[in-house]
Length: 59
Image (cartoon, rainbow, N blue to C red; front, side):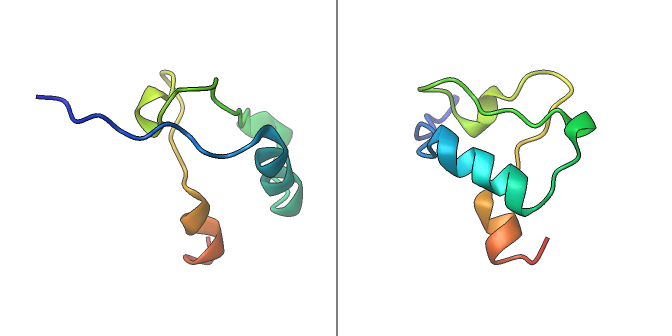
C-alpha cells in the first residue's frame, strides 16, 4: 500500500530564493516540481531535499 503524501507547499519564489541564498551550482540542475507533485515525484536521477536540511540541519 502506498501512502499519500501532501502536495508541495513551496512557492516558486521561495525555491528560487533557496537556490540563490545557498548558491546552488547551476550544474546541479535543481528544479521546482509542478503544482500538486510531492517529494516522491522526483524524476529519475534527482533526489529530494527538504528545507529543514538547510535551515535546521546546517547542510
